[in-house]
Each structure stands twice: as C-alpha cells, then as structure tokens.
Amino acid sequence: MAIATNLLPTQKRVKITSKRQFTIPQKFFIDLGFDKDAICTMGDGFLVIQPAKNEDSGEFAEQILTELIVEGFSGQELLDEFKKRQAKIRPGIESLLKEAKEIAQGTGEYYTYDDVFKSKE
Image (cartoon, rainbow, N blue to C red):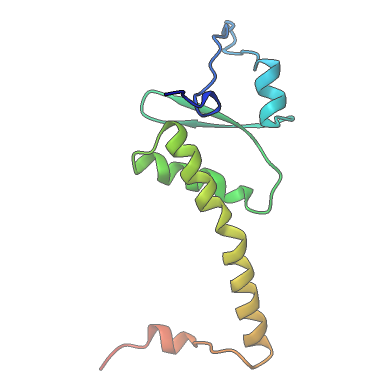
C-alpha cells in the first residue's frame, strides 16, 4: 500500500542564532506564502509558525488557534480544523451585517436594552 507523500509533513532542521533568530527555508517560505510577517503559536511542547495573511478574518486567527490548542488539536489536525473554523468567519460577519441593515431599514427583528436586561418579576 502506497502512502500519499503530500500528506506527510516536510521537516528541515535549522540553526538558531544567539539572538534567537533562524531562517525559514526558501521552499517553505515560498510554498506557504510568507511575506514580511509571521504568526507564532505555542502549544504543548511545540511552536507553529504561519505566514500572516492580510485577510478580513485575520484578527480572529490568534483566538481560533488558541481555542484549538486548548481543545487539544495539534499537527495536521490543528491546521485542518483552523481552516474550517476560519472559513466560517466571513459568512458569519456577512450575516450580521445583513441583519443590521434589515434592522436599520425597519424590516428586521431587534431587541431593546430593556428586552435583554429586563428583570423577570
């Protein structure tokens, strides 16, 4: 039975300088789409370094990764679940904006402060 090699992680040992710096191998840098910034996420005995993307949902990446690490994800499972959850952000925000527009136009359902915080008597 043949193993699909594109599913196996690619590793390369790199030197770390006295200033805690290292060079990302060129193939990794290009293939993963690194530019000027990277996101570093620390887990239980590991460090994930990802290219920082300029996407609308980028501000949620750290929160998503933190939650996934706490939930015990790591390795390829971490990456796969991160992509799934990140893909849900834009549709969620678009839905909220649509709902807000409907409320502003007087066609959507909304709640007042009193509806939300009124005490039950």
